[in-house]
Image (cartoon, rainbow, N blue to C red; front, side, top):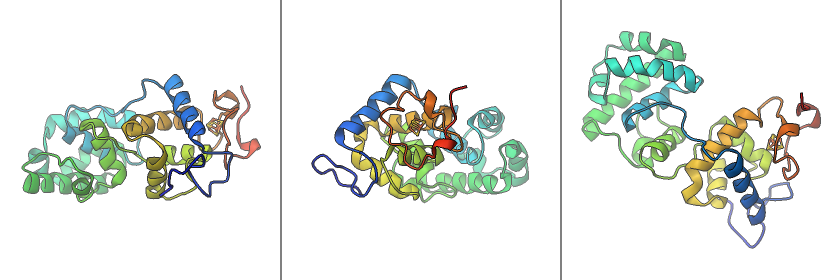
Amino acid sequence: MAQVKAEKIAPGVKSAGPTRAFVKKVIGFFDEYYPEAGCSLEFHDPFQLLAATILSAQCTDERVNRTTPGLFRRFPDARSMAQADPEELEEIIKPCGFYHNKAKSLLGMSQKVTEEYGGRIPETLEELVKLPGVGRKTANVVLGNAFGVPGLTVDTHLGRVSRRLGLSASQDPEKVEADLAAVIPRERWTLFSHQAIHHGRALCRSQRPLCHECPFFKSCPRIGVADKAASKKK
Ligand code: SF4
């Protein structure tokens, strides 16, 4: 994990930063341009958010949001989903893709939550990641957005944006999470994740980042971004 030391706080990162001042600048940029960034999955309780997050793998949040109302009408809680007929479950979640594996995860998760936690979603990372189909990213989504426990949700967008900004040099989501945890104040983890993900979708795109439209362009080390890959302003 990167240690906070004097001015340089992420040793080994090839960039002008990140210094404390640089991290502050990134946070200021995010707060100015993405003040309202939040979870775009629709849910009414921790169970619904966990199920929706499982469905969101390799799928857009919009598509998940179109699928979950029907799913939760049929299976409103862990107890009812634990008894679902796998084929019926697959049919309902089919639009989200990978429906065979996702149905297995939903069933396994619901059964374990019902048997071991009386139908209530556990509130710690350690317990959440032991549920079928639940990794650190999914667990942190639930912690941060359903329980108010700060969590860094390192998906493909947060990882990419962090590397380009020089906040982490790693491709490993767990290492990125540790690097970010060392430099971003804990109470900001959930919001910072939403803001970076939002920025990654809007401008700091994977293939052709819109650097010339990005308000952070002048301050950004743009690590790993080839000039020709960055789209010019249209
Ligand atoms: S300048 Fe480019 S690389 Fe840097 S944050 Fe903006 S879009 Fe991403």
